[in-house]
Image 1 (tube, one colour):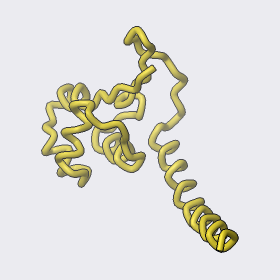
Image 2 (tube, rainbow, N blue to C red; image 1 turned 180 degrees about the vertical axis):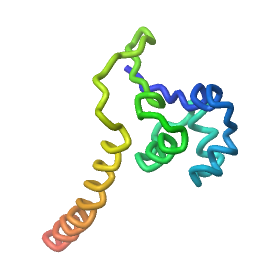
Image 3 (cartoon, rainbow, N blue to C red; image 1 turned 135 degrees about the vertical axis):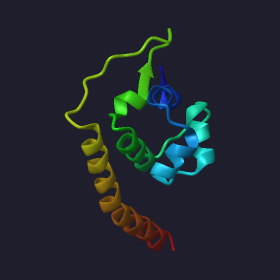
Length: 111
């Protein structure tokens, strides 16, 4: 399986340039270029949320899970992809301090 980033398709549909998306989102132009050419192995949740907001679309309009034959795999869509991303981001920010504390504890135990 592979995840495809269909950002260039969405930009073409809306008649937007990569530069315009950069202006709308604040994401580095080089990063947007990597996304549109599907060269990036990682994509920030924050970037996905900004792109979806700027293009007024859902996550499933940007990211598509493909099977080994290159066919899209249909997944259930959440009521609001952007809300789901916001929730994930909130959780990530909340657990970050806990993870740091846990790492500090490990260091103290090994000393």
